[in-house]
Length: 539
Image 1 (cartoon, rainbow, N blue to C red):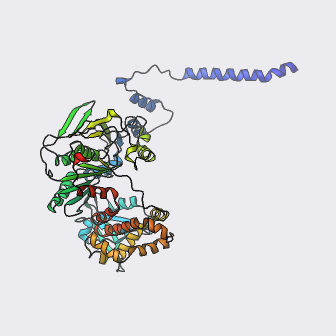
Image 2 (cartoon, rainbow, N blue to C red):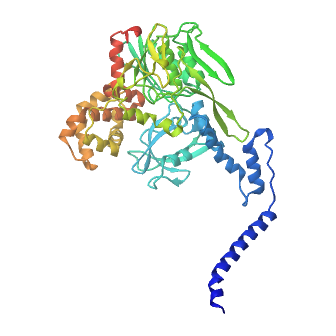
Image 3 (spheres, rainbow, N blue to C red):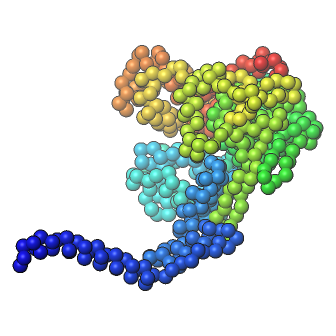
């Protein structure tokens, strides 16, 4: 063969291969259907793409599954609070908002791989059958749940269920060798919005509201009336950590404090006309001094409550700047049981300010805002917060307030960082306060039950020098005794230990009167209330 020709063979092969690929692609294109520019019915590109995928995609797909995954992403591009609720989650969401679920009526904790009853709901199915705090639930429907690594969510699935259905449980009780068997008919169990109501002193009441649900107004009124009957002339209303909820509930609650026609709230939306909510002259608590506690986790309805009282100069707001959620959602149900919560309006406080913080940079940055506040020192120094003059508004009596990012309190209380030591951090990280409190309560439950009040429990624990017992317990759990650490953190640890023991016996009415000793925001509110400070003089 001609050597010259041989040298060209690789080049010719490469040309032939390229030509073959070109011809093949051309033939392939001719063999495929040609799509003309598709018309968009009603301009709806999304449904057109879904139809196209369903009819022409290479593999068989579940269109419904794709839609379920796509909807949350679509809503996420609107604002941080428009959300999709799948049908599988609707029951839990409705239970939370309606204020009840069906179950057996116990609060439990998993201690050393055992489900222990912490408290029994008053009037619930379990209390009626004699189930007691301290009982260990060993079996549910003949299945062993002790010592098998069961998790909280698994226990909830076993104990909750449709109203009227039955569940069998077997309990081990201290002092008895045999198991106690119970067949329980599940019933409605309330989810309370008002955690606790009690008198701090002879004239000052305290009420803690943790959410706004269907029954919140009723619970709030019952709690407030109880305080008034006990002689309360002032009330501290704790909205810290309250994420919000039903708009109707907060409007009705504010209405009890304002004079006729004083504004409570304004809502505006592109597709909704402006609506102004005014007080109706209920004024059930017209004579009470009001102090509202908020923090960076107070959002939505709790901000409406604080903002309405602040703008009308009806109460003193104490704490740290609130979250900054000023968007109103409506829940639109679908026939398959799912729903969309769509933002339909913004709300404005009586002075006209929107407290919604910016969300232009996306949801992730929006929720990271609290972390940014901490980095900038806002949790410690009020002056680190700068508001533009364009966000300046005025209360009924002319005090300056600001919009554009939460409710700024009238009296700022920094986050409490005192009393923290390496010893405290090790104890906190291991959850030793809670564990010790449970073990101690379990061992001394019979005597603790005779003490009746938080003050009685606290006095008895002080007489035992409870901190010596706790220090020995912590050492046995791998945290050696530390005299220096105890000097720094002893007061905090001691108060927490006593408060959690009291909670195990009396519930929240045992916990809050003790923990208030180290609650700097509540202590500030108590101090302000005793000064009889007028609202117009707070700035």
